[in-house]
Amino acid sequence: MTRGDHHGIAAHLAHATRRVPAAVHQRRWAIHTIMVFSLLVVMVDNSILNVALKTIATPKPVGLGASQSQLEWAVTAYTLVFVSLLFTAGSLSDRLSRKKVLLFGMSVFGTGSLLCSLADSPAELIAYRAVMGFGGAFVLPATLAIIMNVFEREEQPKAIGAWSGAAGMALALGPVTGGLLLAHFWWGSVFLVNIPIVAVVLVGTAYLVPDSRGPKPGRLDPLGVLLSMAGLVLLVYGIIRGGEGADFGAAESWAPILAGLALVALFVLDQKRSTHPMLTVSWFRNRYFSASVVIIGLAFFALMGVTFVSAFYLQSVRDYSPLQAGLLLLPLALAQMILAPRAQLVVGRLGVKSTVGLGMAFISIAFVGFLLLGRTTGIWVLEVIAFAQGTGMALVQPPASVVIMTSLSHEEAGSGSAVSNTFRQMGISLGVAVLGALLSTTYRSSVQADLTSLPPALRSTAGESIEGTLGVAAKLGLRASEIVDPAKDAFIHAMHIAALGAATASALGLVVALAFLPGKSPAPHEQER
Image 1 (cartoon, rainbow, N blue to C red):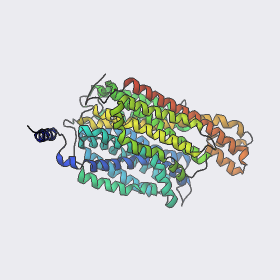
Image 2 (cartoon, one colour; image 1 turned 30 degrees about the horizontal axis):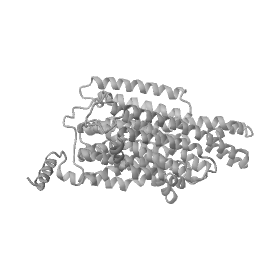
Image 3 (cartoon, rainbow, N blue to C red; image 1 turned 180 degrees about the vertical axis):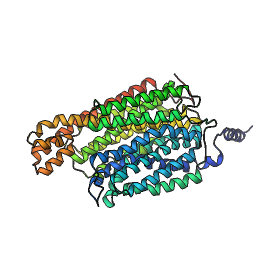
Image 4 (cartoon, helix red, strand yellow; image 1 turned 135 degrees about the vertical axis):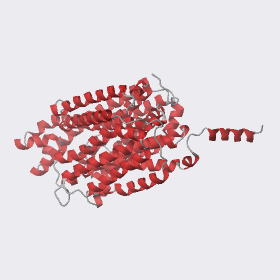
């Protein structure tokens, strides 16, 4: 038999064992591009609104005249609905149709975006943000499930790597996009920009994406849906309230957190007994799966730390505009865009454990690097730190996502993606709440001694945040040396403390990676305990 015969037989066998139809295989990367755009438009929205809040607070006709509480609810409404529905949306995509669930979610998200851009009052904006969160929850789990369905096993790590890079990159691109739009258009443009992307995704999905669902979908568990939604809403709400007030000991924080944890525990018990569970609890007996979702949560906890703290440092301490601040964080996005699709090459040389461990080490070291930042430090130092953070994220999320998804069967892809996305979103919410509370508490205690010269009625407002201090100073026409300079010094000290907190969380992720992840990529559905 000739070498050509051997080659022909090998090609025939490879073709015969392919799971993905040839027509779908040929357009797999076009489908992947559509899924990445779906992910980007939802994830960017998590951070783009923050840039517009100051403008929205401005009285009409420039903004909506929203109060601080209304601004908080514009952010919170999206997060609460989004997180609470992730499990349900992932389960529905496996049971009904991943393509149809994605089309439904994207249509709702686009409608909510349009309505937000046209909102005439803060109450309308809050309601329409909830609509966006509802749609976004149905989009995110379906994207990764569809990618798993259209790629053969050997190409899935590369595809997941590119998808993961987009997830991390989106959070850094939000401030840049928002800054560019607000520099030229009105505040509603940060929502209206979603519409053309949504249109492209809807058309591309309708014509390119094959339909798929689990072969034995079973019926939906109504009790599980209610318990998961109510539990996650209360848990995330309590975390957000604790972060806003920098006081997790307040009843308005710990009461919903405890109630949420109780309902989540009931949800887990219900799923263990259910014959058609939304969440297969036995997945968490696989230490590779459990470690990976925890690591992703910790990594995004840290990522939100760097974007949250850096935004205040650049704008309030260094006096950069929102657009300039966003551009200065681009190395964080660029590192992920360049390196995440190539993370599997590092895994091939070092293994999963060492690659993810190295990534978490990069993230932790980057936060320690924040100790070098002061009021006059060369801005290149922050650029290096941001690139190191992005490099760490690029080495963590793709391999961890691959481990999660290859631990499950294809019919479980939607639910598995929902678990991963829920832990990611919980990490984001906790990162903002916990690190924000640590930053706020440290700042308040540090700046109090410098506020004694202020009128008593203004001390509370001035001591809440650096923005409050600078606002009072501007109102009273105080010299920089009287209050502004001490406030900036106090913020830098608080930033250092918050950065050390984030570095500690990242170091915990490093320990989890080294202790529980496999040395090499596990075999499909491997259930190492």
